Length: 113
Length: 112
Image (spheres, each protein chain N blue to C red):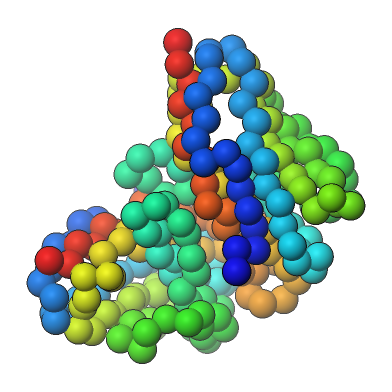
């Protein structure tokens, strides 16, 4: 059972464009939703995270939009750059349970010149 | 000064062998994790320790045995390696609560 569904699997965006990655979750007990960025040969790195008490969080060019009623959240990368080319993972965790993160399946983003 | 360091980075071994992966964190975090990333890049938790105590043990074959000698170290020993064990294994740590993990750079295990 895939508790966090992520789409698209891959994405190609032109430099300067907006990259949008979507995730949906099933477990309403989830209350922490981070996004991770992974470059080839490296471990995932925390990019930005949101709690369900806010609908949007912005950090630089990265924005999370959160829709609690729809159980969906998305990552928007504004003014996408070639250096943003990486794999992006959404994740979710719930209270207790050792802060276990359940990851989405990942989106491979390529930003072309 | 690497925050979460794993050794070795690459590991190639034959089926049936036993191998270990070591992980150390210098962040002072209480909780450490092992995740497996398969060929499709899917990340799945295997184990978690909080201050040397096992708190998460997902459905993992008992050929996999984690050990945490202290809260800064979490090792993974794998017995009787199988082809399907080939993957990238990531160690991670967190201070607990809803704070993001810090991942190591991974150990790519190839079983031939």
